[in-house]
Length: 412
Image (tube, rainbow, N blue to C red; front, side, top):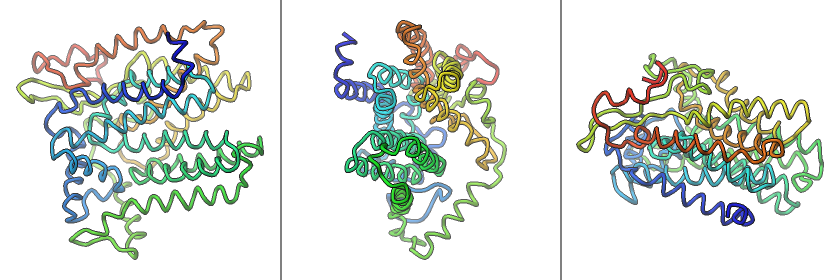
């Protein structure tokens, strides 16, 4: 049956997106109160709805605007806070499928990359909370899809995909500045790939292509500040728009008070310090939400990274090398970004890329492994079910119930 479905890639992608949406939406109203950084972003979204004044100025506005739209459409409740997160989570899964399909030109690794991303747990948790990362991740993944589509397209279509790529990158930066390095990476990758094969990207000349990428992405970014021009108190003006970016930079780089859940970037792939987003009574029961990855996927994925580097450097295999470079870049940027504190949720995008790397590694060695990628689904699904009570805020037996899932000292 799987072989037959693989012959219809568009239908398969739609089925994956619908399945992800159902999974992310079930129980999304638990907990019924604000958890973790929803305190900042949902509060900012409420202020934005009133057009009263600038709040949470350290981040751009698009992610908070999407949360505000959910509140406007559904109400100031848990579903309203999180509905657009679920939609962007599902879009991210569909984007992982499309990205891997374009990267490998094969349906099977695309399918497994999407399944790994669903079972990897980080997308699941972030798709059920009113935070910014799921929006940034969704825009970036689809910017990557548009980039690959432009690379494979003929001239006229290539320009259309390239324009979409620039808009999506600008939107991602309009959610969080952490997306900026990926815009630069896209520009460098374009120059390199175009140099290796001038027929790629429909033969677009490098200068106007980079001009479009820069101008359109920057224009899209600034367009996301439009609501701030209508604030009742101290509204944004064109004269203030550029200086305000430096105010944001100062807030982004300030030295913060140490936090109980802070961690260094090199610990994230090992999941040494996950984050309890929530652990307290709610709706008559003790509930918990732990941001933790699926060990079968996140730890096995590290082996896949090494395997893809090996295939790329030894066998000159372009696709595994590209996947390995992308994951390494996604983690490496946090080694140089001037942040005084780091948190495991910064690994969110890297964890998504890791699922692509894992699928690419299985695909590259498909003859030797004889399609044993299916074998990984057994422990992955088992561990997803095992962790489900504390990633989906289900009823727990009591205050000490969390100990059942604490494998390492740093997980408590």
